[in-house]
Image 1: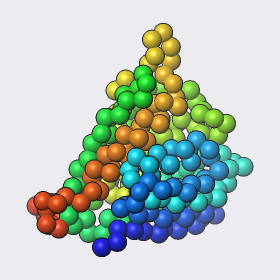
Image 2: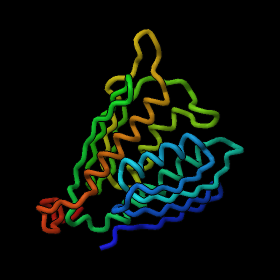
Image 3: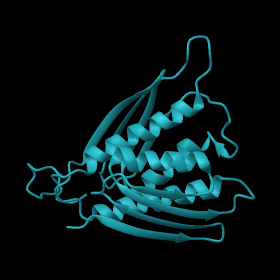
Image 4: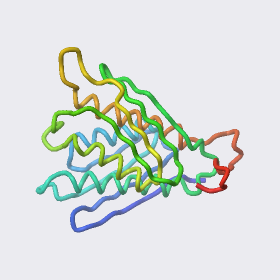
Length: 203
């Protein structure tokens, strides 16, 4: 069965198109107008093993908030749609990812119940010219709400000896960890014989 989705989200502030294939090869075509965000969404495709297309046109003349938020909402909705009734999936996934001095742990439950916990240290306000680091938490919250998942993201280690956390490494390690956790959780469990992974019979 094809596990694909196409989601369009159009508001007065943004126009977003997301296409995803959960059983892809990591192919990505990403354009949001926010260079570092494009780089992070590419991590989701590559490390999640998903084929992912994201095209967003937003009101960047104001700031990046609406563009990033609405893209995350559309991406979450696409994940939810592509998962269908979630029959046969592993449901749970976790990953701990190092990136030089940074260590991040992510855990996900494709529960049908949106709940997001996110913990990271204080970071420099921007990565590149237009990615506000304060948006990373909001990205996960928006994605988790629309995908209807439980998501925990914890930065376990970040500070360099005698220095401040490298914001690029801290955020990129989060995206890689979440991607690897999603890869595990969305994968098909050959032992489940297509059953819904819940005693309730539905997710």
